[in-house]
Length: 381
Length: 142
Image (tube, rainbow over all chains, first blue to last red; front, side, top):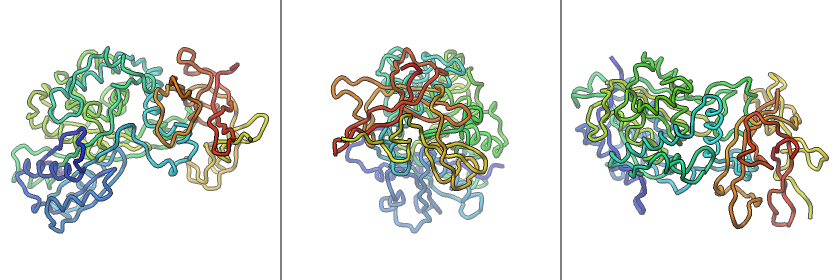
């Protein structure tokens, strides 16, 4: 019997909402998740909140009710939601509490995310190297060189995600784009074009978790959180914001590989059992690389898998069925909980027009970001 | 006005043949750039100053197709008619891989594995009118 169940999910749409505070979006997502679970805020024994831009996500209690709840704020870069989920999972597994809410929210300015370069070296930022987008360009360019991934494969990944988003009323970019339109959009960081990248944006997502043995009090379709693992880069990995790394002879895999291995081991589940996945598609190349880094295919097999539609809604391993980051954007604190929201809806078989046909029972959610952090979660029915 | 480095302690300056200033771990021998206190491999403190080799090969690269927002301060881009430049990961054999601007390159001439050498490039003019220079790697023969 798994330890932790997800009994409610809620989402505030992702996109641009001028004048609307992140905390208001967070409150809406929380209310939606509570309603989905058939519970109220007063039923929550603890909460975990994640955000990059909101210093105190727990301020959301002003809108939800000042119940005196234990509320912990976490921030862990693009893996914030994974860390929030991990904390909630431990809170339940330790027996401290039985039911709680995990909430993520954000509201970013336009343009590529940056951070205070004083934490790194000034010259690195001054030279224009403190940019996540150029890292992703260099990572996929090397990967294409090593494994023969084509520009067309990158374009088809982005086209798939826009197509999926056209069926998702909560997505940011809902207009389908053809692979040619994607390839012909401005080249931002070779080989990645404008429409191959996600954008930071705004939104919120929430999930209600509880101790697994009591889940059926609240729902007849619980989804179980089988494991969450968070890992950072080891010496020898080449990661975001890396002025220098080891020689290539000492190269080691990215933290995604380590996080995925730990998550599979903790869940007692292997990659061949995964029937649907949410992968961090900061850009189209990242989705391609993360397929292999999460153990879902071999390096180089992505050309064939993507061309054959294996990762589309009708394929055997749908990836980013709601449009992923490319079409939803990335409100950092909420992004990983959007992934969980989508996987739960799909595992329940209630995704409507975008319901996948593979009837998955096991799902994987993956986050990755600067300066080399990854979180992998495994869910099952 | 003088020619000044983008940052003190980043490369030897002035010098006929400037070299990047890295660190070598007295414990495990790992080389890192820039020079920092702790070793990224084993955590040993007080890395020794180590001048990096001036030639290497291109491990990966990308174009910079838009003007980065702050903290970017470069003025090597024409005020009108933006042209992409290139950045890469350069492998210095037996030492490390490091990120750098690539000078003297076009998209058609860049090849993973190509030999590169350290150069200095004009970067911007500071508020005193000094020319600020930084490091870059360029194809051998450029």
